[in-house]
Image (cartoon, rainbow, N blue to C red):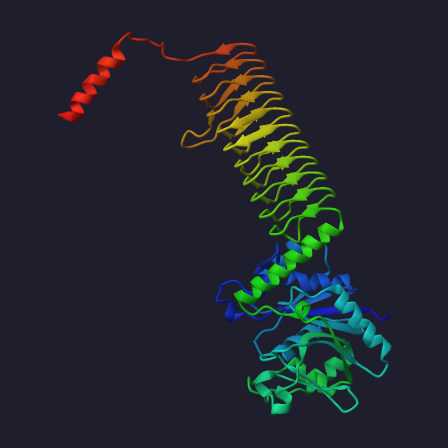
Length: 462
């Protein structure tokens, strides 16, 4: 096969998005919109992708694609003024070196590499054709360019909706999907001959179709839709989430209805992702792990056989094998929960390592800490890590026991096998094996309660 490259048109501002963010950079299932057609082109065999941007969006689009598709062979070229898709394609073709080129739109996240491979194959099988395009059949084609065919069924032209000349043309249900594979030289020649005498006064890429021997391959309409506003973005993202769930299901992962898994997430077989779970960014989930109902995991690692119980939030953190998190736990960034450790209900961690087998099962805040193996942190414990200016570290030794309702004022260390009695405020280091206790002595006054009740009752009546 002749060498193949791609041009992705990503210069549009997307005014209907009503946003300061360029349309092609709006996220869908964890990636910017433009990343999907670029990836599809690469997976379909494009050795290189030229991305056409506007002057104001070049840097942002370049940075977004570098982050989304590291290592991809991309080149960026600027369309200096918005003169239409034909001009954008012409600008992109100035950087194309291959004999054949794909022309794709940057706002088509549902495009699959299989669709492109089929289009490349159709062009190869028809030696008389110089351009192949994807089309789709729509019952409601309003707004789309129509595919016009000659009596022999060959594509004769694409007529944009605003330029439809007759009721017969309006009745056509076959529409252009804006996806092309073409002989690069033939397309360059055609683009040099198109004119802007149309309703929008722009150079239409579609006008080149009438100047080149073309064929159309029908595809799945739902897979070819573009994104022009927030409603279409939501519809496209819903389908992307469904595809991601199906992909993981085919690989041995149980994904319940209603889970939202970004395209970037990795999940190993036999993991279970329950309903209402949201997995975002660079998250990975190990084999046989369970992410239970309503949990949100972002840019984090969850180890094999770990359990993330309902409504827990984990961000930029790690959870070790067979660890248990939640329910209603909050792991803030840089938390490292090692194997078999427990972080229970309403426990919050931040920049803290909880080592193997350690437990904080109830209502605690562990910030800037290091909790040793097998240590136990009681309910209501607080690591007082911030003095108003700086953060300080709390270190708890292996096997230590922190009684409920204790406050550990950092910087402070509790030694190995040490005890901190319930209700203690720890302000000094506790040696290995020692007991720290800091309580006001309890005093019981016999008979005082009845006298107190009588006095308070009288005050209320008075």
